[in-house]
Image 1 (tube, rainbow, N blue to C red):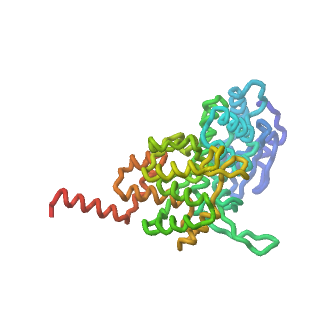
Image 2 (image 1 turned 45 degrees about the vertical axis):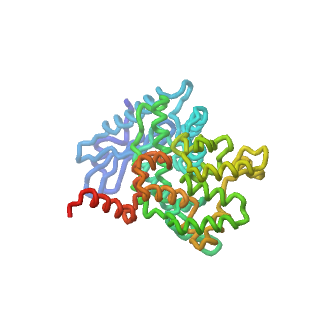
Image 3 (image 1 turned 90 degrees about the horizontal axis):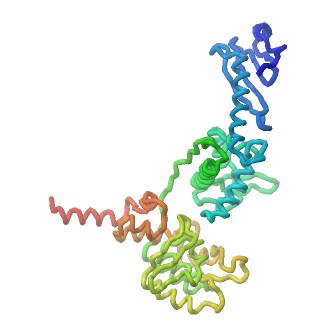
Length: 403
């Protein structure tokens, strides 16, 4: 402090008419229509301009308090810098934090590096940009959530995404906006970055609480046994050599799309009836399989081209294996008399898990088979109108024999 004020003096402030204001040394005093006065500040702190309302004259706010507020912001910025890597002169920006975060995740073999990189590059970094990591507040996060729900997405997005019209030089076209579930995955990355920043000494504490949307999971679409039979028959006669084994594995395990397409020969142990999944969403796991699937995979692996390590090889792909199977899958679904918009590839997983639950398998066991992180995620498959619910009540009635 210690600045000399020549304009922002008590006599000058008292003389202000409604709507007039005085600005000096980053402090603004404005006279409101009701006669009250309000102090605001606009100060440069760590190369970022900070705007804040300090308080009203009627509440006892003074110019001195406005000066002290600016000094407090600068002291906080200095304290933040104490935890920064040696040689850094300004607070760590979100952009730089994101780059270092991804580098450390990669070096430590962290989970879902590609997904984190995508969410940061496409959405989080463009929004938060050069904002100091320590200065990201709850209000900034709420603004991000609001913007993400409103803007069209260029990717396929979540199937529960809303649809809006995008105007341009050409006729209006339909595009999807991000669904709450999609934004929640981005917020999860933001929250993890905050946690790691504290652990790595970049921050003294998390700058803000990350509140996620309450997700409406809606009705889970799964196939009946009759529909499963039709789908399998359609796959047998399709021109794609990969679609039939893909569907067989999906229905017999509940594995995710990427988990199936990344399967290697060395991952399949038909004797132990296990498939090793090194890069599962919830971490490495051993996927149990049925006797029928073990027999199928044994013959299928033996029939693969020699030299390929993949169960779904693709010489044209940079990875060496198929990365998508959308077209043949939609073709087979349509051939089975089903709706490709409703019966998506993830429906195979829903079908396997739903039938496990309906067969009376306890939820902790289903969780182990499906690879879900939490039991609450598995409980979604306990369909309230499922036939297994009625069967369970019949068992209770038979056991108690009250009536």
